[in-house]
Length: 506
Image (spheres, rainbow, N blue to C red):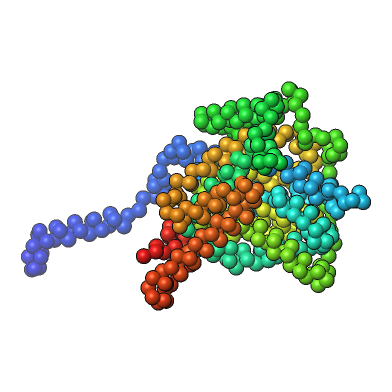
């Protein structure tokens, strides 16, 4: 020790110790010595993947399949169920659009309408799958095709080219409303209970359609609807299939809906039951091919018949907006994809998919494209991502050459799916406070009128209109009760969280 220094032996020892610790802290082991031993998981990830495993991994990451609690195989199976449930549109839509005039000519040929139906559905479903990552199947809408054929072409007298031009203009307007966010604002102005009633209404409507396909509910000139012929074997086959599929769903059997469709189709064929899809007089069994024909849209009625043209465009736009918004929200709620505010992420691209598909369909020769409520069957099968929609899109792309196969599926084969999925969509009814007439009445009208009027869009419109009319009446009563003072109508507030937007009457 240095006796002349002010440091004691103890302080020198502390200094040496601190320098030694500092030197040890700066020391770094060689790179190889710092490599941790590979775990079993690391070894498995280091193994070379097969091409199939690489594709599955890519699809899983691209569509966030695992994050949404699904699997690639489940999504593909759900897309197949969606396509099978929707496949009737490939045959039914062209039959309606090609209905002959009095002179025996068709406004749109069956084969052209079939190609347009398949290709527009494939494009729209694929767009929604890629852009929105949502499990929706899109295709030409039932009801819209009848309105196009008999309402616009016949009654308004626009002709096929003029009617398709009106469809194209409607598609452009819908795309503008969707891109500007106007459709989302309309949805945001509705209380959550009324949105839940839309989901329930779609479920009841879907079950009603399924019961008709079974033959359990039939048309009646006296009471409008009546009980079907209970002696028909098709009815009992469909009812048996419904119970079978219900049992499979309760047991959580994978692919229950698809198994039910296959069972019913096979049993119908083995029993020799009549299949209206295979009517020889319709002449549908020939494949249509994939070559497309483009129509020359005629916009002259916009100037020569502005009233008729404007009526057609506005009616189409109204139906498509409310139908697409309602079905998208309802199935999104069923799939558990809504956010905490009750909005569906990516909904704007769902609207745009409908608009772009409608524009393509108009050019090729079919009615506007909407999100089909049969997509609920795919969601029930486990579809949660756009991979489900992409599977449906690929199958629609192949559908023109699969028309003979599609004809083998009888209507009663898809009826159990519609009935069972409809029953499962009744869940949100618990979110409706039927003790409060201010929301109970609009919700009740939505649920009842949708199946009774056979129109999702009209049922939604009546529910929304009654909600705001009732709100205005209560607001006027509130203004009168406070002596004519200005009162802000709170039911007009745009909010996704307010359950009660109509003010109470003091």
